[in-house]
Amino acid sequence: MSQALVSRCGVWVMQRLAHLPLAWVRTLGWLLGWALYALVLPRKRVVFINLRLCFPKLSQQDIRVLARQTFIHFAQAWLDRGWLWHGPDDLVRQRLTLTGALDALQGSEPVVIFAPHFVGLDAGWTALTQQLPRHFQTIYTPQSNHVLDAWILAGRQRFGQARLLLREDGVKPLVATLRQGDPLYLLPDRSFGLSESVFVPFYGISAATVPSLSRFARLGRAQVVPVITRLTPQGYTVEIQPAWQDFPTDDALADTARMNQQLQTYIDAMPDQYYWVHKRFKTQPPGQAAPY
Image (cartoon, rainbow, N blue to C red; front, side):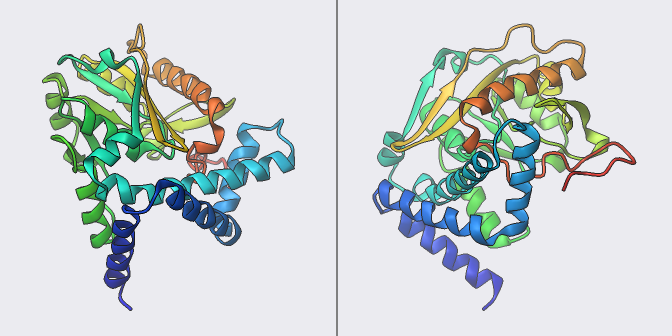
């Protein structure tokens, strides 16, 4: 069976999931999460290493429980894309709750949205583009699988005037539309290699981190507004937090360190929903081995 056919079957299954009660979808996600935890051993090892490094005081049993919950929430959020991208508009709106400082995203002032890598990233994007009367933009990395790439693109552009730009397009289009008032939904809490990153603390460990939050805020003359999405039994809660004060500064390194410090407080509130499956500490200074 070809990859394209398998992918089309997968998309068909996701479309069917859109018509199931949420509790059923979440139960399927729970089962899938358990299977991933048991079978995908290389990625499980990555999660264990990340958790041990960031939470050294946790017992081995606590690490196992947290890792298992990470896989479950990851799987549940993935299956939720069925109803996010194919469910009726009113059902999607009902399951996505916008809370917090909604006024921070009103008007037309330039805004960079700090959206950390929690499992509900797509739900947060969907809520903003569906429920707020602004044009949003984000950076998109194409998938090698063309069927899945088309499906993801269509899903993320389902509502509003959502605009997805490629990293290869450079910063000029992003900055131009940012200054015109289109908020940028940015996921900067990871590394893109030595050439594009700076080393700042993350849970007390020097971690390569892309300084794009400070850079885009400065170039776009924009304020930074964190948006934190939490998976709940009812769907998702999307919390818009007040804009950061005194950010950005002229020191991109200090700004990026502050970003990671704030990120830790968000993770500490729901550590089982962060994207620990990513090799967060893969990029190391020359001559220093990665922990994986």
